[in-house]
Image (cartoon, rainbow, N blue to C red; front, top):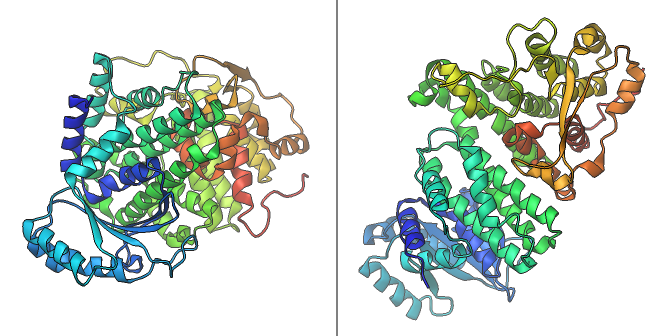
Amino acid sequence: MQNTFLEKTLESWLTRTSEIGYTLPFCQVLLAEGASVCHISRQNAFEQGKDIISLDAGGKAHGFQLKEGNITDRKWTTEVHPEIVKLRELPIIHPSIDRNAGHTSWLITNGWLEDTVRRAIDDLNTTKWRDAPLRTVVRGELLQRFLNASARFVPQELDEYRLFLELFFADGTGLVEEQKLTHLIEQVLRFDDASLKPAERKRNIAASVLYVSYILGPFYSSANHVACIQILTILYAYICAVAERYKLPAHSWLKTLTLLEEEIIEIGAALDREIANDAFATMTNSVWDGALGVYRRQLAVTYLAGVKLLERLRGDDSWQSVTAEAFGKANREASIFWGEGASSGFLVRFWLFHQLLPSETKGLTEAYLLGPLLELVRGNGRKSTQEMVSPYYTLGQIIPFVLGVATAPIEEDFVGRGYTAEAFVQLLARYGRRDILEALWRELTYISYVEYQADEPWQLLRWQNEKGHERSEYPKQEQSFRALKRTSRISEIKRIPKVLRAQARIIPLFLLAYPHRLTANLAKFADDALAVHLETSHVGEPT
């Protein structure tokens, strides 16, 4: 029985969304229907009319051209038909596909075909295109396919309806409310229901991608690239969490993670263009005007760095689209340590700069490792001036205080505590900065290293856990640098989820989306993953 609420909501979304907005969910529908998605277009001249390339369950190749809105006679003649000719006539060139085997061509639109266009396609299919007719999917059928895949989860309670609608109708110009988003994702995944079979889990994973895609609509429309990447990264982490928690076979989730990565990279390319075009200089969005501009810029360059590291760890040469000079220019006036939630951003920018400028270790460690550590010492050390809030306070929660419109003060005391201090100390030791640590050590001993330790590794991937414990330990008053450096080389692999280890390329973005999950252990593991991409190891012998 069809759910009227779901049908009307998805119809509204499909009518308003762009071609880009329904690409990801359409790919997920293909996966749910048993196909494999081999390639998603980067929208360049070499795609030869194929936005998506897939293999069906029988191994037959399919090429898809996706369009937005109604296809009128004029649009067909001037835009669509030339692309369909390339879609049909040019072979698919992909390592997974035999270029001589032929392929089925599809035209997909979230609108309708004008009668003259439908007639033109019918005529071509019965004459010139008889041997390989063009197949079409328009709004009605497309909507039904989304409904079929989405119906695995339908909001049942009033609170569930309200939560979905609040996210669905979000403004799209600011940051997502992480608590609401993660609560919805957990509902769709039925995260705590241990009775589900692997096949049901796979269907719920597909539904989670679709529901998040519907929520992404206003963020896509606002070209809010940072929020889009953040939302997709949170979904990625939750899929890793459910795969780890319930020991799911890779075939039920790995292809979906690849889809999410491709989408993140595509959005990252748009963010790269936005920064390169100096879009920040002409911002008119009042949410980010004035004093908040630096936060907007910092988020943008930091998430771009995360995407470039993702590409780097995937072995994708496109990571080199950003140069040290260009990234340095964008990064200027975009560094503010507003609290420990900013720590991950400093680490991610450090890692990208170190990939771009491997010979500049000294300056980079001072700017991106020492800099935030000094702020933390000044804020939360024995001579505290302005407390630095813990990473459990997100930027979205801090902004009301920056604007002076917070309804209540933060009552928690942060003096003498540091959730991310140990990560900076361990990396400074890794990179041989004895001079820095020796000069700073006395002050560091007044700050306790605080860390959430999960009962099970998969819990690191969940936004909020009821289980686990908090470790608090002061650094030793006297510390051998040799011993510290030896410790800095070692990461406790077993404390990191196996799925996340296998998908280490997402860790920089994961740390940006989950700043409260930054630990010295995870930072060292990520640093190891990136070190293999340098010509020489950055870790020297202990002195």
